[in-house]
Image (cartoon, rainbow, N blue to C red):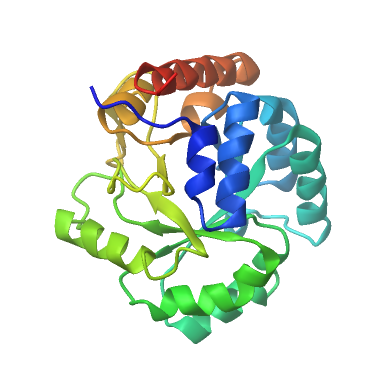
Length: 259
């Protein structure tokens, strides 16, 4: 089995300050768990962030599904991120020309660039999408993930598409921090890989979401961060379940990590 550098060691290879911060955060907190808080009310997001914040390295949200969004929400969420030492990931999946995504990121009612540490985007529109987002985010010390693979059944992502996404990322290492993917794409230790669709038991849901276990994601596929949503937020005891995932993720990370 290939031995991997530790998170702390890999921080030295990052060209983006936020990526370095995330690696060191994971190492210090002993967590590679990202919570996907796919709920539709601000108070529910904040409650999850406060309760489960000590267990996670990232809180991932979809701000545009919140039915009662107002300008106080990002301020309160930012306070909780600082309190519990996690990063905020707005799962916007930008997918348009550079000028449009620049406006979507910076303007509108959400002002995402002001509070989200991490955003993501499809590489399909071409490198202009990265350039547009970078014009806004780089000066704020933000980071971008590119979608190289997804966990839904019958998706159109191919191996060649993933490799072209990697090539695009390599043009912008000061802003792109890694990938949403099902597996590691490169031997460069500076990239961060986040895998969605993780549960303690593998399987599928009725809408085609395909679940893998922490062991498959982190050991077999050599990803770095497991993204867990319903496996935690639908549990009777969300905090206890989050701890299970955190422990499982950290154990799996240590299987092939250089000691």
